[in-house]
Every structure is written in structure tokens, then in C-alpha cells.
Image 1 (cartoon, rainbow, N blue to C red):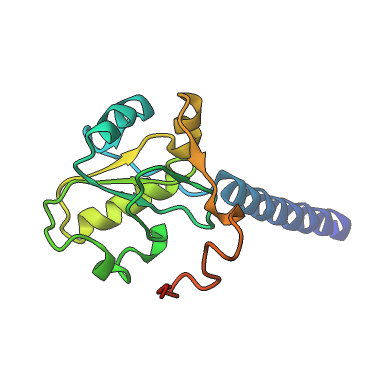
Image 2 (cartoon, rainbow, N blue to C red):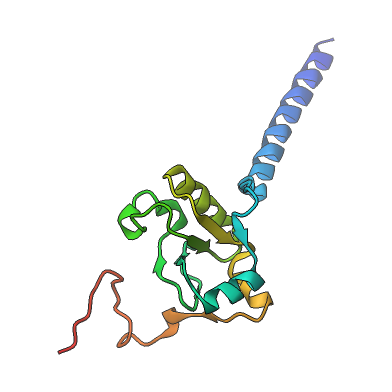
Length: 161
């Protein structure tokens, strides 16, 4: 009788621990839940190519760490630093803004943050720089430029004279 109780306790503990490990791993590998976006909050890479020809929006790279950029990018703000970087955003909250990152996940999160801050005309590049490359778009990598061209500190301003 005692042996059966120990086996039941052992089996219960094993099941409990295995369940905990399983759900921890699922949560770790599943990543974050995809952000649900309303119609009109995304722009395809093909549409963006056309829109960049007559660019009339603020174009922001929100990917971190730096993995390149699309030509005509106006600024870089880390997706999780939107609220802290409000001074880098347009003062007029109706200004058209297009966000992008490498895959679209970070820019979708940044879009939700900007909407929460009152911005009304924000979209993001669906599929990010990966989608941009798939339609033949070029991704520039300025991190490979020599130190003479780019300052080591992003906040450093160069004045030649």
C-alpha cells in the first residue's frame, strides 16, 4: 500500500514538472503573440516601392539591433523606445508615418505604441526588410562604412571646417 502511494506521488510530481517544462519551452519558442492590426495599417513591399518614388511620409526604421536600412529612411528609433523618443517623432499626430524592421514584428508593435500615443496615420511594412528584399528592394548596410565616414557615437555631430 505504501509503495503505491509513493508511486502515485512520484508520478504526480513528474507530470507536474514535465508540464511546467513543456509550457515554459512552448512560451519561449513561440515568442510574442502576433499583433493584430486593422485594415490599412500595413503596406506591402510592392506598394512601398511605388510610394517611395513620391515619398510624402516619415519613414522610420525601428529594428534593433541595426541590420540595415531601406533608402530614404528618415530616422531610427528602437521599437521599444517609441515613447521615450517622442521628440524624434512628428509633432503633428496626423503626419503620415511608415515604420519598418527586419520581419515586421517589431514595426507592428511600434505601430500599436504610436497609435496609443495618439498618432492617427501610421502604417508598417508587412514582412519588413525581408519582404522588401524579396521584391528586389535594396537594403543598405551603413555599419560597414569606414570609421572616417560614420561617427562611433551615434549622438556625435560632425562639423567640417
